[in-house]
Each structure stands twice: as C-alpha cells, then as structure tokens.
Image 1 (tube, one colour):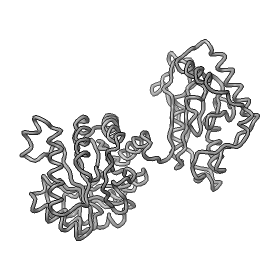
Image 2 (cartoon, rainbow, N blue to C red):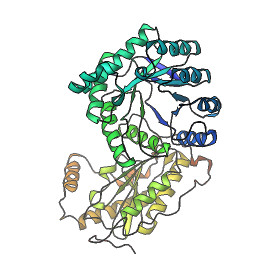
Image 3 (spheres, rainbow, N blue to C red):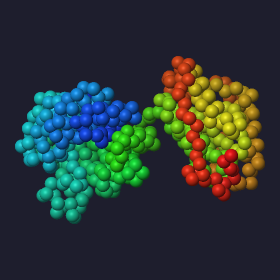
Length: 444
C-alpha cells in the first residue's frame, strides 16, 4: 500500500518506493541563525534526512535565506495562518513548505501559494491535525473523529488537484494513537500521494517515544508511510531522529549504525550485565557500520538465541565467551569481556571478515558445554527450545570453524584505515541505577 507518487525535497525522494525519510523540527527561534544551524547539524549528524523550521515572522525569513544555503540537509519552512510568509519562504529558497490549507485564509490564498510553488518548483506538505479541523467538520468530528480527519485531508487534496498542483505530500496527525492509525489507513486507500506520519504532541522522550513507536510502527509495518517525524517534548531535536531510526531499524526498513541486542536478565544472571550493556552501547556510538552485537545474560541459553548477530558475548560468574555469526570465538576473563569484544569487532572490520582460530574455538565450545552441563537441571523454556532445536539439526563441528567466515556484511570501512576508533570511558552503574540486592552476583 506504499504511495505510488513521489516528490523530491531538495534531493530527498519521498514516496514511490523510496526509503522512509527521517525528519525533525528545530526547537530554536529560526531568526537565531547560529543556534538554529547548530541544531540542524545535530539533526543531520543523528541521521536526519530533512529538517523543518518554524517561520512565524519576517525576521525568520531573513535567517531562512542563509539557513537553506548552509544546511547540510533540505529545509522545510513551517507556515501557519499567514500565507504571505509562505510566499516569502518559497522566494527564500525553502526546499519545501508545510501548509495547513484550513488555517491559511481560504482557497484564494492557498492558490497564491500554489502558483508561487509551481514557478519555483517547490514541493509542499499539506495536511491536518486533530486540533485544527475546519469548522464545517466539527459535527462529524464528534460522531466519527477518524472520518473527519480523512475528509479534511481529502478535501485539501482535491483543492490542490483543482489548482493542477500535484507536487505534495499529505499528513494526518492526532494525539490519539488509534485515531492516527485508523485515519492513515483510510487515507492510504483513497489517495496515492506520499504520506507524512507522526503522532502530534506525543509527549516526553519516554512516553512520546512509546506512543510514536506503537502508532507509526503499526502503519509502517502495514506498508503505509513515506516520511516520519517523532514529536517529543525535548529541546534536543536529534533525540527525535534517534527514536525514528530505532523504529525503522526494528522494522528492518532502514539500517544505520550498530544494533544492540540484549536479553532482559533474570535470576540466572551471574555477572554485572547492566553495566556491561551500558558500556557496550556507549562504545558502539563511535561506529558507523551496521554491526549487530548481542549480549546474553547467561551461558545456559548458549548462543543460539543470538546466532544471527555479527558479534556477541555471554557470561558466567568469572568467565565469558565471545562469539560471532553463531560460532564461539574465544573464552575470556569476565573483566576483559567488553574490551576483548571490541578487539574482535575492530579486527573484523579492518580485515573485512571474521577469522576463527580452531584452538580457541574448541576451547570456547568446551567451556560453553561445561556451563550448560553444570546448569542441566534448569529446564527453562530457553533451554528446552535449544534442546529441541539440537534434536533437529546436526551439531556443528568446532574444527570446521577454523576457516575464515565472512564478517558483518559491511564494506570493511571504519576501522579499515588501521586507526583506532575513539572509545568512550568505561560506564559504571551504581546500586541505585542497577541494584544487585537479591542477585547471584555482587558489584565489586
């Protein structure tokens, strides 16, 4: 149900099968050029494809002229109420103009903006929020808020088509997650223009991220949506971009940078996994490669649950195992587990492949078998699933792992220059952040 039509926003393709574009909105006063550019660069560095800036006054237009030239990513001018500002934003070179035809002053003023956009070749985003429906739809909104949203959006689309303008994307946003899902599903069946998705006024970084993941994730999983913005109550616009990327990565729609997989821990945990996970997550920030790293809290589960990961670790009380692509790499002391994991990651990225040493592989496999035997009485669901799986497949020969295996599937970049990647300082969680009371381990 992907949108058939495609538009081009400053070189970023939206719709028509293009990758879902990530965008955010600056939180600064647009007229403050330096502050706005710092935030735009932060958005771009976090992986933002597009950025939107509020333009409520003429002095914002003056800054916009410079911003669109110096921004590393395309800039969308966000206009409400005053159509002359939309005209000026187009003249200033905005790569796209966001407009709500319902609050801009009527069809005649919308037509003025459309004429200017046609002449400049500037695409537009049109749409409606649940809080700004046209007055004639208020009665319908009380009876069927979803249909009211869809009707408003379709009316705006029909207005654009009467004006012979087709270079636009459409958005329906609501603070209500089920309504947002239902309205976008209905709209996708009725129009073929690209769709911009978002949960408007979603909330704080915690609650807003969850609401956005549920709403946008549901639609994206249905194949609906061409560009997304996570609307969070935070002054750090790049945080919205990070959440957007996690949603896209979770759905396997796009990939950017490392992905960390970690088990939720339980009463079998024998080492300070919370600290280990926090340290690995922090150190992975230095990498651009799409490497997948897994952390398993106990060796009882073996490495089967994360056999798809490029690299991973699993630990016991004093020792741990580093594995790659479902095979043991080597056994290491617990205190060296994270450092040696990154030695293997860097080595693999530099060489473009992961190399296994048969002796260390065999030692690691023996250690894993010993740990599993020591815990053989713990018939957990994970262990039962593992035993069932082993009964259906031949066990891998550890000696076979002596051959070099393909690495992360990346291009071997990043550490390939031989230079050491910057590493973050070790993360240390205290008892308040990660209590050990009642656990099988202590934090020495």
